[in-house]
Image (cartoon, rainbow, N blue to C red; front, side, top):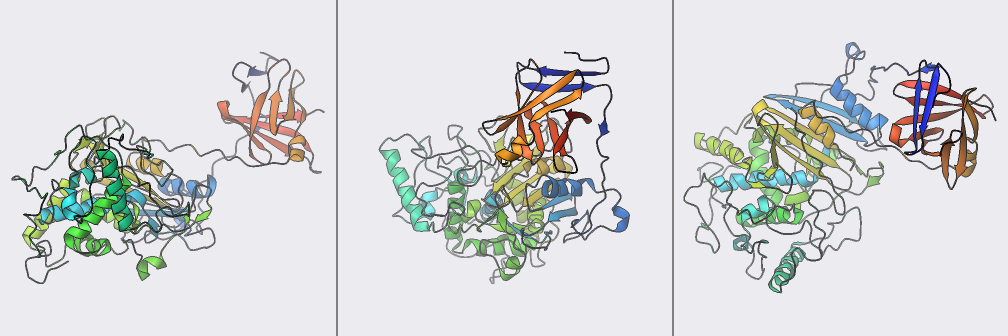
Length: 573
């Protein structure tokens, strides 16, 4: 519909869309300014073991692009309170950070800040599994029942096979994502009070249901993605573009009971050929319960607690200082507060039984070290490691990342803990996301590039897009969410009236049933979605309307912004 030779507006009634096209604009969009507030810029790039310091004055004119991504996520879109990101390039590591430990403090997040890491706990669990396989404590082909009390009945897989350790490590055990006998009354801390005894009771009942012929999984919600209870967190994935023993045998030669003849224990002749031992009929279904059970099995196999195992197998050899289920005094010093996706504080996660699946806390520096080791980049091993120790330690991480079984996502396979898919050049991308009710964590690497990424946030809003973008800039960032706020009826009514873009074209702004609408003459009305006081959004057209008051506070015009052009409509009545 043409109204003049210099200005045309079309209101497409069939879709309720508004298109404004103009030959000239009455106002321009503001020029982007990249000057960085040094008080809020915590950690531009730095090849250091800790977090980088605030930028110098010489850096203020042009903001580091990674730092800008983090700042925008905290300050502009308001999706988190504090976020840290680490980029690994070969032996070099770069740390970025922006935001605070919680909304009530000025303490900045850094590479030392401790976050809950949710399902990324499984990466530590499977790393320890691979190390224990190398030193002969367990085998991937061992039946899980061999490591549990005889009074516990372990279910079978969906194909009716005994559940093996590899089933747990690759999410092909057939166990549901979570047990149905959780006892917590706190929605923000669903695993609080869940005990080993309750886990055993669930396994017994699940096995009984199988024997009675119930459809498996029975009466359990079993989403195909990772996330906290009742929530989904797994995204689309990468896009198609581009402890020393006193016997003197070395820390990997653990002494103790020889369990080679234990019931259910199966030692393959070729210990190096253990990839893909599971039949294809045992389908993938992500299970926090299964990974938590795996952590428990490793505890019983080693006769040590989960935190002790981490210290002996990973923390001491790799110099990890802040990774555990039970926070150390040092970890508590740097501990961040979790927030929901509305940035409201939530209680800390108190998972003490399914630790191997969801219960760890860690920091960026420790996570980067684990990711580096998974790529075969281990900065230093203890001096008392023998050559054989070092060889087996590296071999355990090589075995860890081998793609073994298909998942329910096309082109995606599962390694031990990691998800794996190939990019368009045939290179393996490993990644995993984790989330609790107050935190989000992401890790990924491309071994052929010797590049890895870790992103940790103290909000449950996803940062997966940041992680994939930092791994490969061709992966786009997700658009910021639209904020919906409340407004009183009187405030809505204050915007109503007739507005003219030109003498030939007017728009009637009306209010009805709690919503604001715009309607040109002879056309259906279009809904204006409230973003903030005075700002409304036309969703289908990605256009924004801002009502502007005069000096007395009465609205006298609105601005329509679309595709970088701003048009003014005067209020005429």
